[in-house]
Length: 109
Image 1 (tube, helix red, strand yellow):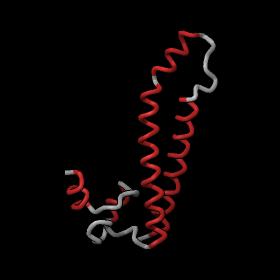
Image 2 (cartoon, helix red, strand yellow):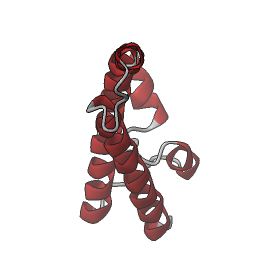
Image 3 (cartoon, rainbow, N blue to C red):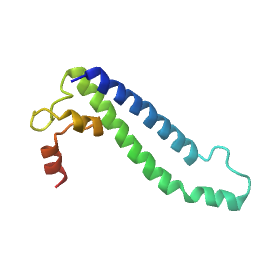
């Protein structure tokens, strides 16, 4: 399996997610907020949704960083739980996964 291929996918994902987090942070801080009180109230209504998206993005970023560490230490292509090889098709769909399908199903159950 091509380690460099997956590393590049993860690095691209890391950049995209980091950009999303920065954008969400700017939106939550209301940079460039309107001077009109009614518009400000409307802009603040989305804060809870943005916060949830930010938290999800932070979790995704941590999983991506962990996957990059796994590439570096040579464990990327093997399940963290059982040690079996993670199918390449699964890594293409979820490049930051640390588990094979069987272990992921057991964890989610």
